[in-house]
Amino acid sequence: MNTIELFAGYLPGLARDQVQHQVLRFEDARQVVLVHVPVLTPSQVDALVQRVKAGSQQHLKTKSASEIVTLIDGVIQRLLDVNHPVRQQAQAVLPTVTGFDAHMLRVGLTRYLQSFRAMQLQRFLAEDFDNPKILDEFQPRVTGGWLKALGPDVLTHVWAGNVPALSLWSLISGLLVKAGNIGKVASAEPLFAGWFAQMLVELAPELADCLAVVWWQGGDHAQAKAVLSQAEVVMAYGSNESMAQVQSLVPASARFLPHGHKISFAVIGREALDVRHAPDTARLAAQDVGRFDQQGCYSPHVLYVQRGGKVSPASFAQHLSTELGALQQHMPRSALSLAEGQAVAQWLQGFEMQAMQDPSVQVLGQLQDAWHVIYHDRPIALQPSALNRCIQVVAIDALQDVVPLIAPCRSLLQTAGVALAPEALLGFAQTLGQAGVTRVCGLGEMTSPLAGWHHDGRFSLLDLVRMVEVDASAEPLAEQFSGYRV
Image (cartoon, rainbow, N blue to C red; front, top):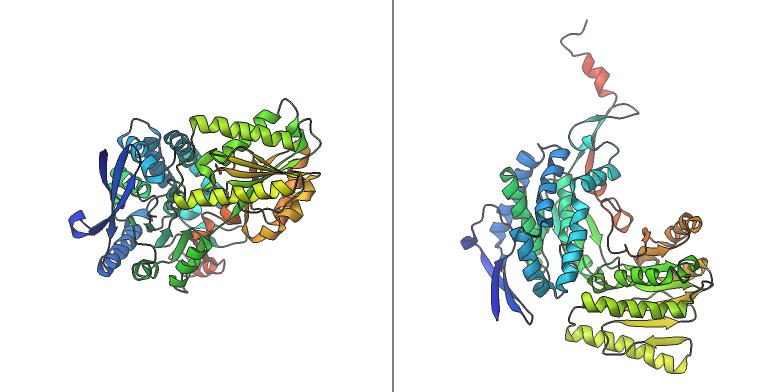
């Protein structure tokens, strides 16, 4: 069996032989991938943080936002090139490391990277800043005075590994606001952030000391605290339990921006269920369910389908099962771990027992299938699935019937995929927003948020900066001390 050895992370100022490493082993039927992750001492952590802090002040903060966009775009264009060595390496090893199908990774990675090209990044900046030049120099305020946005000297990221390359979102956000970035990779996907950092530095060597990519073992509070205690802003991704652990290590003076567990769903109106549209609607829904096997916070767990269309909700559930079966042929589900397999089996068996007593519940497919669709002919509340292409289809009479069904999950709601008539879209989106949803998108695009989306209802860039104001009173007073004063 072929064995590949790789080193994860990016550590400016530290030679590889100066750092201890731990080996993470990943294996599938094709190959073994051994990833050496860095294990830093407290003194190395402190030196690294200080180096990144100084580097960001000297080099990153002196560049314009447009220059930074151009540099990021340069890296992204290389990563989009399927012939680039790093892209080829990613496609060769990430299926083994993450367990996701190689075709799914190729398609998903390309769609994801497209969000970070120059045009998309310019929109990203414009989404949060009416005048992006506010990141470069003081800009006039309408009410008088001047205003400038300053990114932190040290922005620490704690990344999850459930979706490949997830780290790019916050890392690029940090670069756009000219922060010194220190990111902690997850053991489940420790490679992509380091690749990006190395490629950025190859393109712009002057940024070599402006970012670092580190690792520590989950539960290693000593090393985590050594990094987190020196941050001005901390962005973290993961379960609610891991967010609580991270927060306990963040100093009170730092801004903590957690992205914990969320749940998403979809709503399909009767207009999307005529004979012509229903198969395409089912195909779009299958894409949202199948991409990355529902591992993202934006993946649907329940589809609410309105009665009254030419195709009934029960028939739509059959269409969805067929489309998930077709998806399995060219984009197979990941191999399940023992725990994942047991969770899916327990989830399915619970509904099989329920279906024996309740004719309103139907279980489509078999246990050995790589996807599972449960149909409910009466309303049920939103609830998490077992992931890994397990989905419930619930019939509703009216769109408004969804509101009480999602109410118990209000604090956890994130994305709602919709397939609705135009006259219903904005009104129902307002209803969903009032119910706690923070993103409404077209069905089929749930796992592909646009650049600049307001993750969990917050600002991607504005939350990272602090504003410095020059009050209007300072300018006329300064005029009194000018050399040209008459």
